[in-house]
Amino acid sequence: DQPKPAYNRVLLKISGEALMGDQGYGLHPPTVERIAREVKAVRDLGVEICMVIGGGNIFRGLQGSAQGMERTTADYMGMLATVMNALAMQSALEEMGVFCRVVSAIRMDEVAEPYIRRRAVRHLEKKRVIIFAAGTGNPYFTTDTAATLRANEMACEAIFKGTKVDGVYDKDPVKHDDAVRYDEISYDDCLVKNLKVMDASAIALARDNDLPIIVFSLDEPGGFRGILAGQGTYTIVH
Ligand code: UDP
Image (cartoon, rainbow, N blue to C red; front, side, top):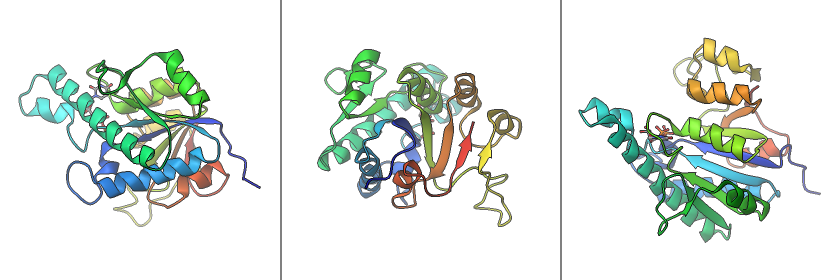
């Protein structure tokens, strides 16, 4: 008997840094493969999955602009970085036999499909994993906001935010032994307490559309699948 997943369609958001392993920069293929295996385990439950991967392991617009680059150009470079990460994840998933499409918010037809909502929905119905690349396609946004936007458009039942820790804490659990994890917390408390769940515009967009955010550890093998099967520790923001 397979455990019944709590959700039928979800969006997994990970930062670009989740793909760099112990390196200080870029992509670490064994780490990409490890995360792809976590995704496959959930796909194998029959859950429909979209992904949004950040680009911070390669380039962040704000960093570029702090060094004198024009902001929108720097942001486009950040969006292009997310495309590289998406392609790496696609490659790892396909290697495991998981059908997958990279769908880009910026047209680059030789590399990825353009974003057409109905077509993307169709991929999900056919149990293909979708990786949404190039963020929202607009400068001044983040991939957290892109994740919330796409999750709403695809009618996902929750956003899963994979991090290094198993939820949202009242203070940084890496630095403080006495940090306390919340089992659940409201969107407004996240905003007021300035907890580092996602950026504020992403949290507000999730709140306004009643989209729960589940913060969990991607370092725990089988953790993603476990939560969908009703196990494990995490924080739900709702
Ligand atoms: N970005 C953007 N618009 C978007 C999404 C991303 O301009 O809709 C740019 C922005 O410069 C950002 C970079 O892409 O710094 C990488 O995304 P993000 O910082 O969200 O990546 P993460 O921190 O999740 O790795």
